[in-house]
Length: 126
Image 1 (tube, helix red, strand yellow):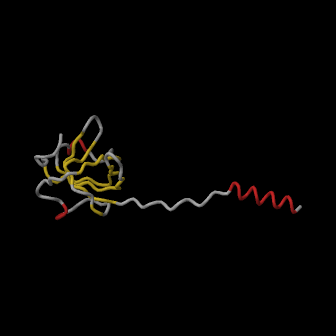
Image 2 (spheres, helix red, strand yellow):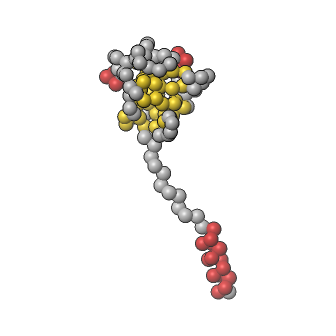
Image 3 (cartoon, one colour):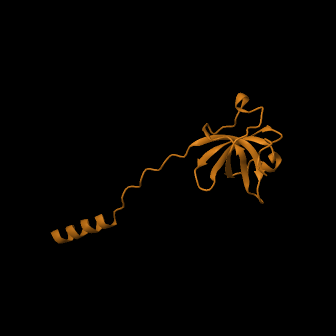
């Protein structure tokens, strides 16, 4: 009987899983830049500002720039099906979403897009 208990405990320990490592929180950020389609359905924000912490809701009032920024960052946009990006193509936009840091290009899982200006900064890559 004792041998059966020892075997059962040993098996339970052998199959027990370590608790999952705590996941890193994903930051919600805001970036402003030029919305470009670089290949079919591949949406990017280029000439963009660095990401800053934000709320997921849409930018409003003073959060919307009146001049296109001449940023140096680029971000691939994912989860964009609900945002009518073709209607904002080649516009300056404020994008908010979950920031996924990656190499060679970081991604933003979009939660909101606001049209800021009908054109982009002159230095924005095509």
